[in-house]
Every structure is written in C-alpha cells, then in structure tokens.
Image (cartoon, rainbow, N blue to C red; front, side, top):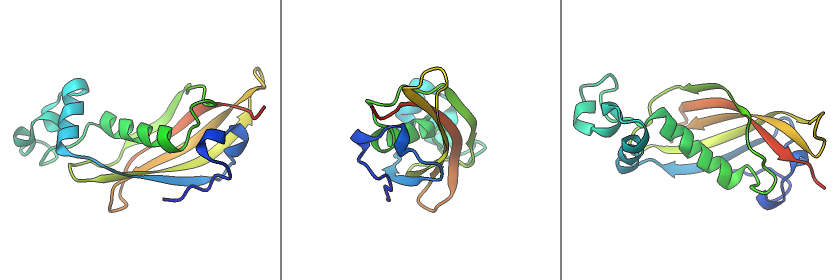
Length: 156
C-alpha cells in the first residue's frame, strides 16, 4: 500500500504528521489458528475459540475477538506508522467500533488519517496527534474504526 510520508519511519517526528495525511498499510492474513490462540488467552467466548460451537452462535461461525482485530491494527501501526523512538505512548482512543466480524481467511489492512496535530502547551518538545484509523478486510469492508491520540516528539 501507499506510504506518503516524506521521510522514512525511523526519521518521523511530530512535524511529519500533517493534517489530512492518509497512509495505508497491511495485507495481514487472519487464520483460524490465530483467532483461537488469541481468544484462548484473552477472550475465551465460544464464538472465538470453538469453531463447532460457533456454527450455532449469532455469527454462524468462528469470528475473531474485536480485541484481536485491534491488536492486528496495533501491529500494523507500530510496523509502519509510528516511530518507536519518537512515539511517547497514547493517552487513549475515542470512538472504538467493531463494524463487522473478522473471520478466518480475512486479510486486514489499515488506513491512517491525521485529523489534528499540535504542539503541547506544557511540554513544547512534543505534541499530540489525533489519527482516524480504519481497518478493512480484503473486500474493502470496514471491520474496525477508532480515533487514536499519540504523543510524539518534535524534531530537535
């Protein structure tokens, strides 16, 4: 997918997250094994851990936990969008939604849109970036969305 940043990931600072910037990354396959393993550890509902029991459940088959989908998005974000040296963490997310189930065989990609970026009034060596994140499957169907806030160092 496209990476429209003007600098490589290792060189990104607050100033590189321009309002309106859109970057897309992904093509992460989701397997039945990964769905079951994640859910067994963190969200052991039958619809996530038992393919046979899930057939008679509300989704008619095994689906990934929403938290699994969010974890896949986080991996895409860390690998492609946020510089580990300049990212200082996140004070949180807003409007987290799981729009449709993720199933074994789906391939996920993420679109990151910078909504706002500003220098901190109390700590001028850093700023706050708000990013709309949309995760879609291989058919282009939206499966998850959220707005994440990230604290990012300014360029020295």
